[in-house]
Length: 438
Image 1: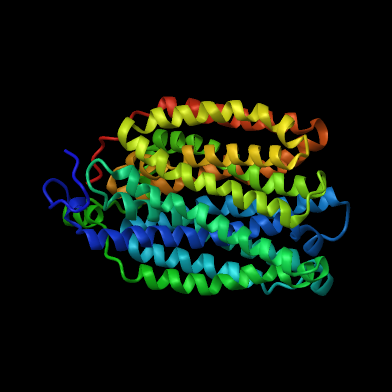
Image 2: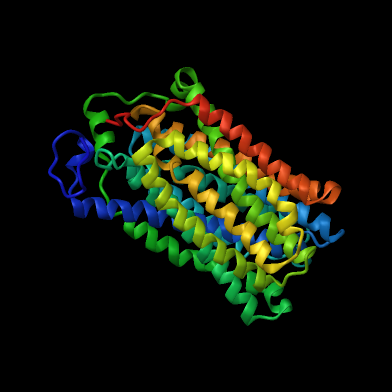
């Protein structure tokens, strides 16, 4: 039976948390992912605009872009490692302390990137240091999402798990808007020379302030009821990853492939199109960043709508509808983006990011629901971050190559194929709306 957040506890450990406690928990899950994804997207934006010429100055503009996108992909390789590492401790010692550690790793790595000298100053050591810190970003983010999703869903009242799981899913929209908004402001305020010399470093260094805020909020929250119950029942496993591989390999892979559509939609429509729009369509940096800031508002709008629908109708129907639309959207890329028309490019970005919100929101509940409590942190995090390798790490690189060889129609076809892979995965997953997490 569904209850409102203010209803008294009657059925499950999750409903034992009062309204004020849930509000703090929801805010902690949201603010952490917003900060972590701000850090991550700051690099994505910089990779599209400035990382190539600053750290890989030799070669053509295309070669610089490809090199920058390789460093972009390094973090996605690191993210599953982070999910293994932090997932182990999240399932062994608790969600709260693990989330604090992941945020700290991410924040330190991001801030230090802002201080790495360019190639002209220290030569080949510059890209080496950049890659090490980018790897650190991936480790931190790999431990973030699974814990934030569990923090929200394991405290959710009955019948509203997707709604609560939506708040960490809002973090990427806000983080992206903050990152791109700051780059947009810098593009307006600085000359190209100033931006390339020092301006691009400002968003990285500013991360230190945001991380301090996130750490303060997370230190104030309590452990989740589901994990406390698992401790009382002595259900914790010695090595969660081993148990996950031995007993839960199928849902792990299904969850990973289901995530591919989310990553592909987002990183093709932001990182690749930003690079393509500035270098090939000759948009100014500030104008294209402005289009992305506008379009991401529709991603933020779609997130609560999709979460509400997945609580009402189930996770699978909402995901299937969104993925089918994503398959169709790939065919719109060449005519809309290739036109070079500002309204048509904005329309394409809006469609893709809206569909990203539709397909992303239910994952906050779906992935935790695929796994039992003793391996839930590890399982949800590994699925989420393996999906990142499959759907995001190589997406801008592949798109850059496809655009060079076959044009935007090939890139659109890549989007459609990636969405079709996720459709097959979702069809293989059972409906999880009524699964008990305790």
